[in-house]
Length: 134
Image 1 (cartoon, rainbow, N blue to C red):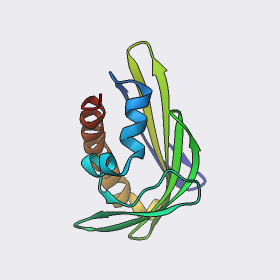
Image 2 (image 1 turned 135 degrees about the vertical axis):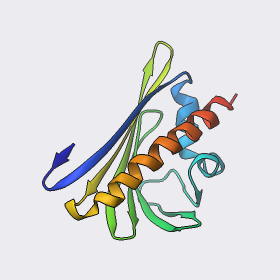
Image 3 (image 1 turned 120 degrees about the vertical axis):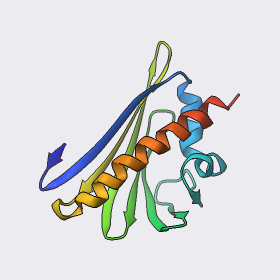
Image 4 (image 1 turned 180 degrees about the vertical axis):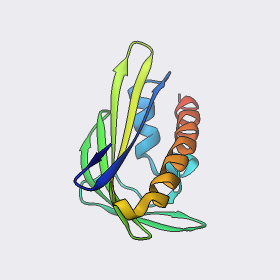
């Protein structure tokens, strides 16, 4: 998807886990670390946090929270200034999870391709973590 000279990456997956489990996996610090990166996340609008990996740091700030339904935060690293938005929708068999990362400029095709690859991998870990919760 492309608007106003920026691209948006969208990844969607149906998960056989309740919205509560998926929500916990995307909002609890130790669980985020299991599938994404080390972090100092807090579920508070305005909270600034970092995601840390061997390749560097992503600076973030929580923008919006709708418990068990939606979460968004800024995602800034290596010249990329973007917004990650999660949407959880209950289904008959679990949760439809949608992640949008918006704000890729035309000169950031490599970052877009890297994000596309990375989010597919992260979703696999996220599904594993959500499935491990009781």
